[in-house]
Image (tube, rainbow, N blue to C red; front, top):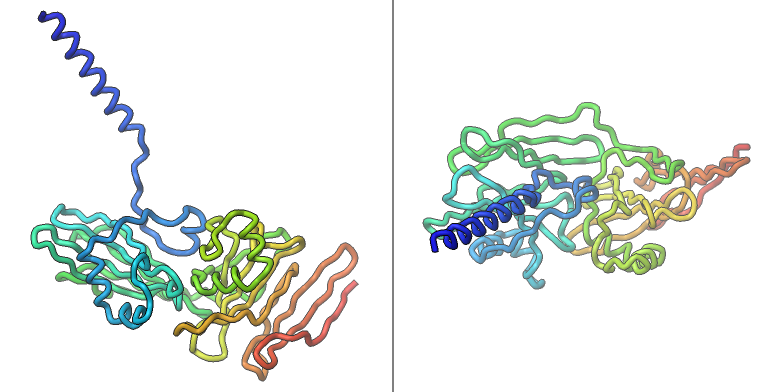
Length: 332
């Protein structure tokens, strides 16, 4: 009898040991600390978690959210990620926009804290930025937050620290070497975009619905029309705009959206405020040069096409709401 009990006990121990070993082989879910277009292009979207009801209710009370969603359905328009904190009394949620309001301009982030003991939530940080990085925890047990604001002439990193229940600005740094990219070379089939920015959902939606080339490529590869591919098919750079309203994006095609020769470029103006973005220029070429601004307030664009025996410069300028051909020059 005792021998039978020992045999059963040995079997249970072996099973428990196997379970522990199998669990140790499961790769842990890594918390995402960086949120920008380059990270998502390389790693995919971060791990989305359900929004607790009290967190969702708090978000819908935000004045910016109320204004944006005054006539839209709210459900599913936030992407929350769960952050870690050094105590077990609550949880941190990083929420951000989805849909047509993402990336116009930049993106809005909320860091919300839930308190289990009191069953309540509070917003401890909110910012609109092009990139957000969750840094190391300091003496407060909360992480530093680095928010990057990007324009055509500078990128400024702002560092925030948790003090007395909220985040405050600790220091700022502006990159003195940051310059707007003016030249894009597609000789190797993949132009280098030096300072990529997030492509707003409504810009991608405009391209995927109105541009036959993009629409056919997405359909051929099984991508839903209203969602951006996560394999780096599109990258965007900011271009100087004649006025401060909205942004001007140079969208560059990669992979299946590059085209048969060189690559494809779209210049898209996006004013926000519910106004549909407009494609004001599109071309497939080997090189693209963003030139000086002329009397129209928009830059002159030069597209360079190369063959085995010649190189042709095609010059375009902005007239009556779009770019039109101005002149060409062939070099043998």
